[in-house]
Length: 221
Image (cartoon, rainbow, N blue to C red; front, top):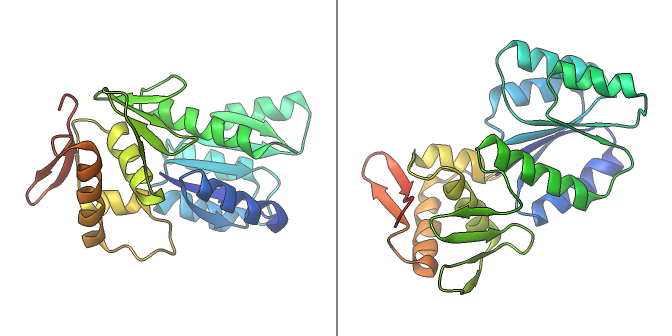
């Protein structure tokens, strides 16, 4: 899944991007409110981590503008401010979750995972679909037979995307938009390679090809 982090503190955003990448996300960074608002409007992010104290345009204004334009991307607001009314302002502006600084990266990652699952009507502590259980912390998947399968970073992001959209046709373009960050080479042909690898690990029945359209993750393979 693909995240946008809008944070002007490079000492925070750099290590945070590394940690989120290791946790299985494709991550883009923006260092001010203007760039962050533009990227969040133009790119299909699965969630946004948004600081309030941004240069050029405040995080609160960015969030208000997104929501006024109908952008429903899930947003976790970060702030060093402790006043309760500022938290209320954030929720009124359309924030989905709130986390105060300083914070533990593990808590932020858990909140991001939970937020994405809820956005896809899959609440709960783990992602379960079609007899598969995805371990987001270990980046493994367990089958109904009790086997645990190791996944590479790209395999994990791809499988998580499929499991969040069961029964839906996902084009190669949509897949590349959610599996890779802005700086990666988005070669849609590479997706075929990773789909083949997942089929080899899980079985060929889970992911079906729709010629000229894309792929479908079967709800009941």
